Image 1 (cartoon, one colour):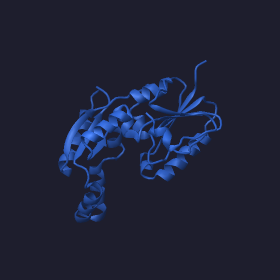
Image 2 (cartoon, rainbow, N blue to C red):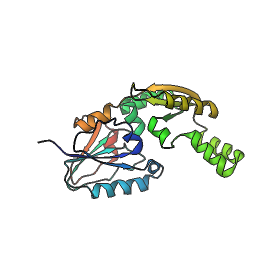
Image 3 (cartoon, rainbow, N blue to C red):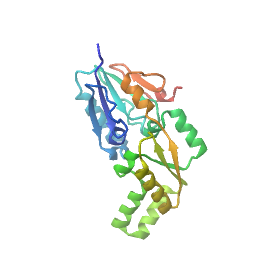
Image 4 (cartoon, rainbow, N blue to C red):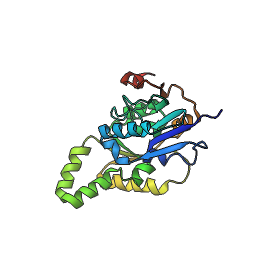
Length: 219
């Protein structure tokens, strides 16, 4: 019998699905801005889980995400969560790859097509600050929040044409005085999750139990 799934994911992850959802999969795509408010994200995720009925597993397009997925639970459904620190690990293909990138270039701000489309890049934020508070205050806020960053990297998860987004990321990096690079990611975690191939890259939580921090530290 075919398993029925529900995918709950950030809008930025939704942009990476590329029509690959199995037939009959339910979806709930949540507001991008929730990632800035982990407590609110946790509540929103649990509410979405609680209203879910008639599926075998709930797939979360999130990682640990500032502890927002810890404690989530369903009495009837298996929960499946990528074993990654946050969505950057999903876009890069694994938490191992994310850690390698951090070691090679720790001061990196990552962008994807979805992050750019939904306003999640530092150039748009800077322009908003400048409009609201003036250039001097925008400069001060930027220096305070971005002083540890030296590189703006666009994660290319597919070979399809993304030149428009790459050019935007390059321009943003130049405007902000950051080094620009394109790094290769992939959609492997999403493909495996949707196919039911839940290997060591996933935290699988049985009904009535909940994920804890050590679940994400294994492997």
